[in-house]
Length: 233
Image (cartoon, rainbow, N blue to C red; front, side, top):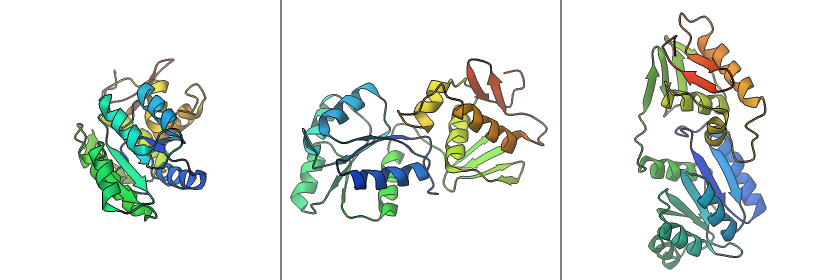
C-alpha cells in the first residue's frame, strides 16, 4: 500500500474505460476515494458540486477537451491541484496544459508508482499541512508508511481501515457523521446509510481499543463517531 493517501478524494477524468478502471483500482487500493468521469462537461459539473483534493485530467476527452476543462476550472477559482494525462509527449502539449492552469503533466504510458509520487508532491503543496506523524494519546499513525501503533503495539489495517482511522485522527475531538465519512473515505456511489460504515468502525474499534486502558473511538447514536482520549466526549 502506497504511503500518503491521507483521506484524499480524487476526480479522475478519463474516457478510455480500461485506463480509467486501471487507475481507479490502483488508487482505491492505496486508500484514495475516487470518482470517475468520462467527458469534459461531466467533469466540470462534478467539480462544481463536490469538493475534490486533486483532479487527474486526460487531455483527449469527448465534448470538451482537457485543456478547456482545466482553463474553465481555474476561471471558476477551482484551487485543487490538476494533474494532466496525455498520450502525446511533445513539449508544446505540456506547456499548453501548464499554461491553462495544470500543476503537473504525465505522459502515457506511465509507471503507476510515478503517478502516485506526482500526486504526493502535488498534495504536499495544498493549503493543509499534513504532518508525517499523527498522535492521539498513545495511538500513533505514521502517514508516510501507513503504520499504526497503540502503546507501542503494531496494528495491522487494510487500506480502507487506515483511511477511516486517519480521517478520525485528523479530526480528533470532532463529531463525524456518516455523510462526511462516506465523502472522504469512499466515493460518490457509496450509500452513507448502509451499515458498511458501522462495520468498519466496529472493526477499527476492536483493533484499536481492545485491551487498551482507555477507549478512543466513541459512538454518538444517530449522529456519528468521535475519536478522542476524553471519555466524556
